[in-house]
Image (cartoon, rainbow, N blue to C red):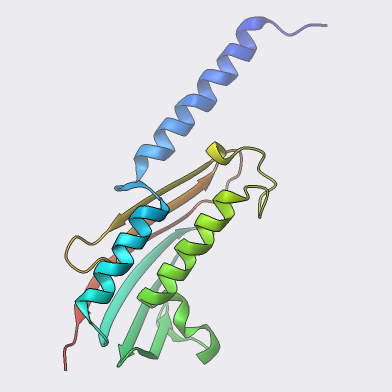
Length: 162
């Protein structure tokens, strides 16, 4: 038995609306190599080697992260108030966030990793870089057809110049 044409059109319309809502949900623009490179240059030029940053993550692993960096080295990281193992501390440093975005750009170039996505346009990425220092202040990645979106927002950033 054939499905009515309107059913296919309706499902297509729903998928389009979901794509539009997700792509507009987060502040920022699509993640591009050019924007990422320019933001990294702004961050390097700011010459901030010591800072405290607090990040809220949503999606697959909602949490609150606090990272203390002194002279370019992560000296403390807590997630939801608990100390994190030393080998995992750098993930939420600003350099770690830039590394994550670089990985996302590589994954977009080869979209079958990690979600077996057939088309790059099924991955929505939105990023906002801080206009003064260049660090990624918010990021959203959502793969159409999957429930596991990832989002982060920097809640506070305190440079500590020496």
